[in-house]
Amino acid sequence: MELMRWENGDVLHRYQKALVLVLGGARRTVSTSPLHGGVREDMRYVFNYDANPGAGMAAKLEAPTYEEHLMLLATRLGLDPAVTTGLSTAANMQNVALATESYEALHVTAIITGGIEVNGGRVGDPATWHVPREKPLQGTINTLVHIDADLPAGVLTRALVTATEAKTAALQELMANSNYSYGIATGSGTDGTVIISDMTAPYRLTDAGKHSKLGELIGRAVMRATKAALAKQSGLTPERMHALGERLRRYRITADTLWEEYRTAGGTAEKYDFIAAWERAEHGEAFVPTVLWIHTLDEWQWGLLAVDDVRAAWAELGMTAELPQGDDVREWLLTWCRERIVRPLVAGE
Image (tube, rainbow, N blue to C red; front, top):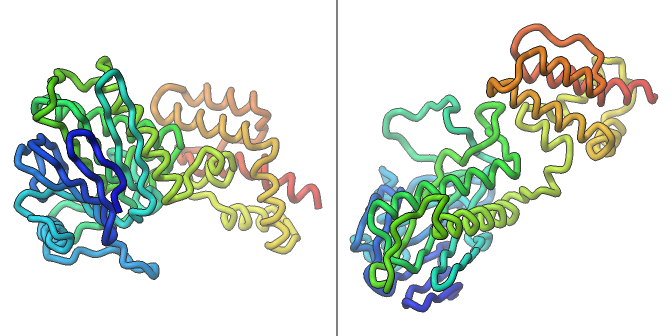
């Protein structure tokens, strides 16, 4: 199936669980892939492949290394591995999001698939991968950016930085959570990116940073497509995040956590009645104060607010309980939940 065709002859196809970008002429690319990664001028194909076997099974490499895995996939797709760079993921290619931004004769198209719920993380989170091993493929945001201008190698790599910043900004605006800390995710642990520029274009651009129109277009296209892809693949939308359960999830506080707190506090309702009450409370009057409280925790962790500032904000929001001792932010937030959510439910019985 043909998804998009550019005036320079490049064509985007979707077939056999893959997106395949066939390049119609001389292109300069920068790729994070182990298959012909870095800056190249000899690539003819770029692909993004859905390696999810389905039925709830984890995606696995089909060869001893990720590079060999990608070479095998290229061959399967009918592409010459010698002139191909590509990425693999567990995201469904039917959930691809395309976004084009233009200024005068310049056009930038972002082609993105993505999931964040499995291995979303914040840069600097604790990691375990140090020596070569089987690469996880779950929860990947893969980004292809097609630019119909000639970009020198340095500008191309700057475009890679701008695209990465845009992806992170989209995750920040969605408040996507890290699965490895209490922080806001900046990406997944397995994200990949390929930027394609046209060496035959009649004009050459010299900057892809945030002060340039090219950088602006990359930022807008990547942010828009990242949000759309995450909505399709993971159901991650602003509407979904307008709920206490979603905001508390990055602190590993769930309906089951609150159920245990409720029982400890003397609640007598059956669990199904408690869950129904909790689901009503998720969108109730405690939502905005809790969001504000969580943001004070973020600012405290980032060193922007002192403990006394946090305590003053808590009091301003009507929190009268004693603050727990120590620096465990999850325990602080659990105290808030006990006061604002659990105890009112118990008192109302």
